[in-house]
Image 1 (cartoon, one colour):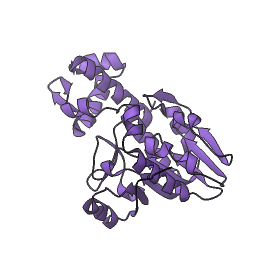
Image 2 (cartoon, one colour; image 1 turned 135 degrees about the horizontal axis):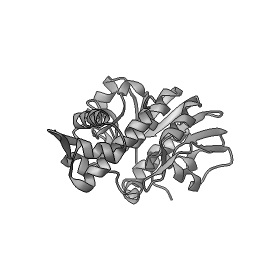
Image 3 (cartoon, rainbow, N blue to C red; image 1 turned 135 degrees about the vertical axis):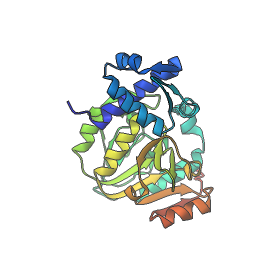
Image 4 (cartoon, rainbow, N blue to C red; image 1 turned 30 degrees about the vertical axis):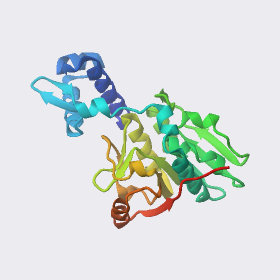
Length: 265
């Protein structure tokens, strides 16, 4: 049976998890652990080495320092850091939504903050963010969860079930939070399972594709690629972002909005 991208990414994450426990492993051990052929393991190791996540040696591989450091951050950390900036970004993204929109929203902490700011509009939101169920929403906001495997502390829904659900939807707008956006790396993520979700959302959106990212993400590149700058149309960030980095992104064709931190009474 032909491998799909979601299954490949899940297997590669299992491979990385195994190396995190053992430090090193040979190809035959990994093939047995993952229940795949040695050829498949070698192909995965080649891809992971190109991303600087593993270092190959004859017959096996070991984890790199980059892979050990670049894991999913604690959910509490992502939701409390730079909160005033993230709220301002989310509020502006909500203002761009129009009555009748069907909107993809991914599992980022910044994207999750958008719900309270959607007012007096009839909006359908399709998301893989499990924590959306706990968010305050106005009566006009209809919520659809993709389903899928629950991953990590932020309860993102990933895997083939989530991808299949997204593939059947055509959105008019897409709002994605990212771990990094840069000229060199495009749109990148800390979590390998979420890259295929982001890619599918971008592919199935026929309108504005909006990146919501606070200034700490601008000019930053992480290990897992979600898309090129040509795949998105807009970036909303905060006023602490590097103007040099923003100008480079403008030159690449992005429409950029810069917002001041939101001070709520």
